[in-house]
Length: 305
View (cartoon, helix red, strand yellow):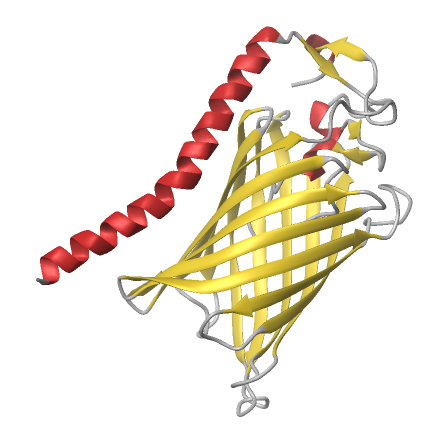
């Protein structure tokens, strides 16, 4: 009976995993076919560093690398209007011989006026059981076009409509910048608050720095995550987690990516290690891009690799 129950559970997990994997592979195959037919890249304005991932795109003149999730723990800016990205998050956490797997299915939608709307479905695997955790709604607002304000601040608000846990609100300040040639940086300040129950509260700081090893294809670097957690009965005795580790971002095609950041715990309250994995693909909707979103075509060979 136990074996049959496990087989049934594993089949449910497999079905949940196969859907985003199949969609991802389909998008990757289609993108590869499109790229095989295209011998030029579209650019807007000048490219001071000579890197394609630094070229400005869209009406906000943001660098191309900001249009995907290039870091495991930190977010940057907003998507260009008229674009969508689908992301699959997988975050396994290992502590004291136990493990927990968290999953998020996300769609990001770039809106006008430097706004971005994100929708999530949240679920996980706890003690061998698949658990639905609820859904989330997120809205971002960039304070100005890219490069107009140092570190390009973006405001972020998220509400978690949890299934069997108290609802939770989340506020963030997103920062991001390109430093020198090939270096991309992100930093996030986070405040989370449960609205009932144990009224868990969290302050967090995350940061990431990566280097473009192969332009628009491979970035690698380091990430860190610091978290200060309390509940209504432990305000004076917080849990402090600090994790640090490598980060890698790979783009198999122009429209797909995989990001992984295995972080290792430093403090006693930290997990032994936690891995942040994101896979996604993006595309444009609403017809062809406008004149402010496209520039002249140039041979790919003119850009540094």
